[in-house]
Length: 65
Image (cartoon, helix red, strand yellow):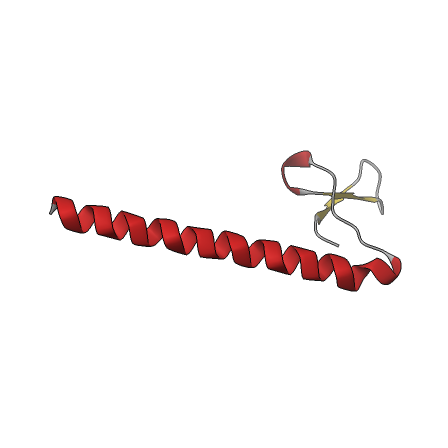
């Protein structure tokens, strides 16, 4: 589950919501391992892209200074 619990309108009730009011990610059953692998690979790709952009920024700043 990826999301946050927020208190509901009545006492003792809660709502599961994703960030920014979007739906929360909820994986049930045997698909959890496969979905976890997909999300992990996607996260590593984003991390690599951020690293490449950081290196490009360092290169551009080094050339201008």
